[in-house]
Length: 511
Image (cartoon, rainbow, N blue to C red; front, side):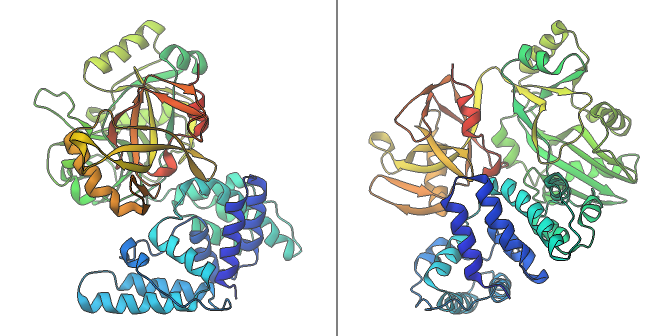
């Protein structure tokens, strides 16, 4: 049996080094010696998550704890997983539920050492939830599976790409790790994990393009230039009459998009998986702001547009070129295909971009027609072209306002992804309406880790889209750069922190 203390020690070693090789070695050594029943929970914890999801325990409850730490480590991985299951089962409100939850949590914390208790508080509070660690975990699972095969005397080299593909298609890293570490033929069994209709797939992501000319110079003439809507990303699954619609974070929103569900049921297929955008429109057909689209969930009037087909009637298409997938899409839902031009000349491409902007959309997408669907990856085969620079950054803290903004949380601290964490690159309060200030003041304390007289410091989970005029070098912020004329465009409720822009992407904007 593996002790929780061993997981905590490995997590601490990973946090203490910047070396990706060292992180992978530490994690793989631990994963390789786990019992089969321990693999899923331990993998989830090391990636900063829990198998049980939310347990209903807030930061106020965690901060109010006064445990008596155990002198030695006795909690096993199985003990903690069972305790988290009990806590999850007690999620809800009411004095009776609250008392039982407090008792269960108190018993768990009293059984933990000081180090284990701090780890559990951060895990339960979401402070360990760093999606950027997933890449290291994928490499560690592959290395651990290779080590495990060594122990049986039949060494099998398990490539990280095999683990990555299985994870992206299943959406479940703990389950992928369990297959890799317990299988007699991990490479074959990982390859057998494919797209499953009604189970969401990690969406393929686009990279920022410097300009239309630069995107065309890199990708060539074998491209499609599509309109880029400022809507909400959706992934739609149908099998028979059963329909599921998921967000880009794989959250099920089927009940909130009745029009899209009805459309999917009307398509001439038995099974299908489509990728696209949904947005609210004005009466004249022009798009409404992103925030209005998000508020419209649960009502009618949201219009879906699709730009990819990942599966049709038993045939998986993720490894087929985009041109083939677009042809399948056009045959299935011709009235809902994202507008675009195929193999345009430079002049036709420019006209398509201008038409997208004129229609009220935020820009265009340039996609290579031979690209496969790289689930969960951000590659150069898809590039987004916008008229101004925008970055998706994470809010690290927020300062209390002064003058007219006194009493409101105002100036936000912005962070970019760096390794397994985030580094600060600037602040801004520009572009904020009174409604934004009220929302920040109401919402940010739910993500609070601590505060001082000037600011509230947050778990790095809230993503904000920032428009800027450029980037310059600076010694003022830890990231070594500063944003020029940064202003808030919107908060990205649809995007996890793991998909925020990296410090390398920010530095690439330096003149």
